[in-house]
Amino acid sequence: MLTLNVRGLPRSMTEIGVTDLFSKFGRVHKLKVAIDPFKNECRGFAELGTRGLRAEQVIRAADDKEQITLDGQIEATQDLEAALEDVEAALDRAVDEINDQEQRLEKLEAQTIS
Image 1 (cartoon, rainbow, N blue to C red):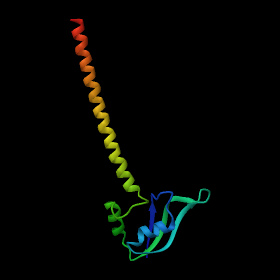
Image 2 (image 1 turned 90 degrees about the vertical axis):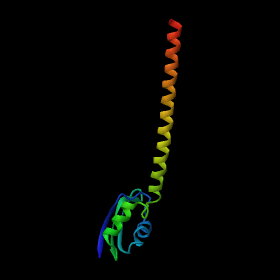
Image 3 (image 1 turned 45 degrees about the vertical axis):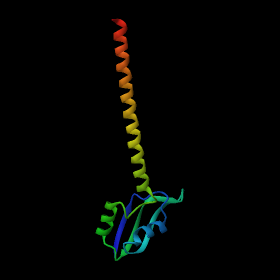
């Protein structure tokens, strides 16, 4: 049996969610998700025993980021990155426009003085 310590789980993760997440790689035994007793939510880590699961498979899948997703966090991260790129592009356009306006103003001031 292989024992895995899993970290970085979202607060909304449940035992069922962890089981679903890892059962595609092998049978999950002895699952213990750390739960905050005051908030009744996941503390971000779990320990699970597995049979038929190889650590290399899980690591490769996690590196791939396509086979393992935690409550849509990876998709949400990709959406946020795309939105950030859009905002950065809009800011670049705004800065270019401001620079153009400043150049026009300088030309007008130079014409007015002459």
